[in-house]
Length: 579
Image (cartoon, rainbow, N blue to C red; front, side):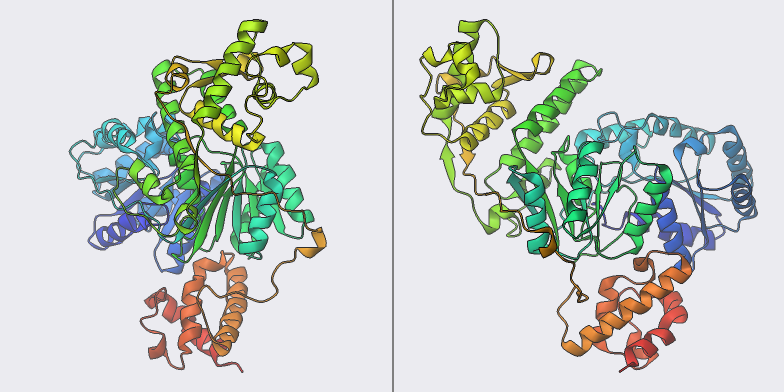
């Protein structure tokens, strides 16, 4: 089920039902401290007894939770896989099992058990102890992003081969997918935020810690509330930044992929990638952190030749076995195919997860179909040049030098090595560097060109080069439409002072919505919870639109259950009634 699709309800509702039927506690295995805190806080607001055991607790606090668990005072207990398999915790589970007070094991982020998954964690393998030690206790495994191979591996590793498998649609129709060619990524990002998401909450993913810091600084200097997040920061600083992201509006978190898993903020309006992820699973999970409230959101990515080279190099240099490397190359090729696609992005994305679909009308290719050109001639020029350079000099060169030769540019290095005398020198003068970089990306993606990471990223021909050189294989490319924007003065970028509504409201309803958001912020601070745990923006907008005057008027509004009606109804009516 996709990120934000409601997987948690699949074990929370059975946990409550089984606890009320006298079956005891549900244990939720999760690797994510942030998710534990978030879900336990939300469950408390909904009137459900829940707790977590993780490293954020003191020894005394952990002891108190354990005693509550053994007394049967907890409906759902969240714990990490490392804790689950300790002798101490297993001994406590033994006591619950003997008294028939173990209701359910829910294994969240279950793709972590598979070496073929995008987030393999060896400690998940030890969870086989659960069915061996506690036969008859139901087990449930859940994940958002697993292709067919990973799903099969999950079933085998967790020994759930006889379990029923449920695969819902992977589609997130409210997310618009946009992928553009990388030019000046910082400028492109600023333009993207200014045009579409100024003043809104978002996440920007970068590959390196250094880049995270630099991008966060650039955005902050432009007047945005941007914060960095990566493993190199002090743990207290990371926690402070995460807390601000959860509790403040308009925060742009610039992060490595270390940030986001377990973050349940529903009103993230955009997720941007300044570097290409490793595979579609990672991309899908990260983009899925946008628009969890089902309101419009955007997944935006820039990518370029260097992204392709870097990802290939990381695979080739990894200590993994050749079978695993080959699988990772295939996953990267699928992501490159998505990035270079000229047809519907969503159709390609869903097809990766074996789901058929039709053009969505809500991705960049559907909204503005790109022009396509035949790059086969340019591809043959590049391949011939790579061959002739190596033949003449006995060594290989990088992409920039090869393109200089093809375009007839007499650079210092070209003249130094006498490459202006090659028969292909200047043959591609009619092609721009941008066009040739696109062709080279395609050649690398289709493995007709290899990048030698051990030799300064020089280019090499491969057995697949022959089919292109002979004209047996064509190279079709999208025409570049992204142009670098002139950098705005940093004073020209300012956050919106008007509170936005997620749906269209008239002027009176918008005033009520603004008042409700201010009240919600006060309640959230008092409860030390993210604001969306009190009420989602969509719920506030629905209240503002209805303008309720009585308790009956509040009933039936999505997001207001019996517990919240009892806790907040009078205050909501008071705020809405204010002039």
